[in-house]
Image 1 (tube, helix red, strand yellow):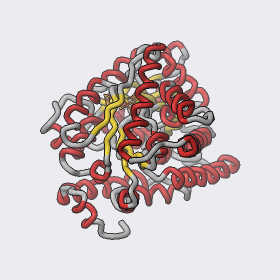
Image 2 (tube, helix red, strand yellow):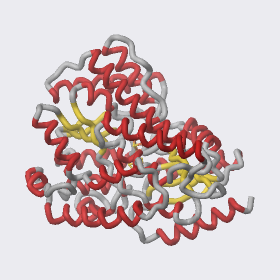
Image 3 (cartoon, protein in one colour):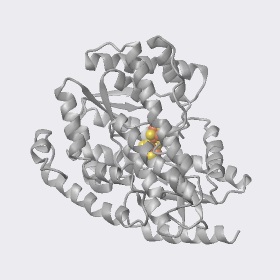
Image 4 (cartoon, helix red, strand yellow):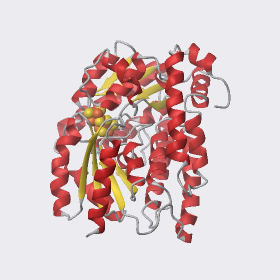
Length: 426
Ligand code: BJ8
């Protein structure tokens, strides 16, 4: 890190000793997993820097924003409309976490048999380990899976929260409920920030977030080239950083990276040989710093060429329709766009299956890995329908259910290697 941020972390009330241990773990893992990759695009340098300053410079930026009167809002789900937070002069930061470092803190207030993503995030708050939590003026939860919505009752004892009621079908009644929720979060943001959201402000925020999604979609189109111009692990990192970096700067840096990748594609330059089996990963989200399965796959002779995931295509596919001129018409467009996301918390959720097949075909993938976090009922149960549909489409599938621990990494590696051999034999 560029400077000693200890005074800032102390000011935020972090548990300094444990926070330092957490940073040590991360800073030890990152070079091993990331800097060991061959022929990385030069444009990844920016994202390496962002990781190195994730708890430093970015937090300093959030503090400066707050000092100037702005608000910081933490979220856990791609259904929470970032555009509304930005239009109220806020900064939106993702609080999902991808490490088992905070499991002990989480298990003091939550049962152990719970999705690791929820435990990791709540443990960060309870253990005072995360400067993003401590910088947030408000945390926005949502009624998606049972684990999350019950966890928000616990989290609400530790931090000011707003919970959006997300319906679980896409019926007319559900759309109407969701529209009401979108209008309600707009009012909550106005109240929090002490501003009135204007049509111009909302229009600009929509354009900004659409630009970010378009840059990520461009990156993912470029990954479809063979040889893949960027590793899946690097692309995943960019998708993870999308949740907390400054939107304008991030979009510019992703587009710069894409310019470099376009040149690589023209020159036939890749990070793995052309014949490397290509895989799409689909399922539960992989929050930073969860790189486990990508790392296993890419050190087992295969390459990941797409993520059908909320840290992946569910986040960047689809833009908010170019808005009308009133705040109301823009909120309607936001509400429609967000309800098109296909999370396994919905029933039925068959459109997701079509998207997995489409992604696998477009990316020239030889197979799909269905990834479910342990105790993630929505994605685990839905994996049965995914299996049947991929079977019909003659796309090989490997199902992996795992948590954040590394105890099963060797076993997953053996299964991925066997899958790769199965693909080669076809
Ligand atoms: S839109 S996937 S971000 S809810 S992994 S906590 S589902 S038990 S994170 Fe999600 Fe929004 Fe859906 Fe996406 Fe529950 Fe499963 Fe854990 Fe999950």
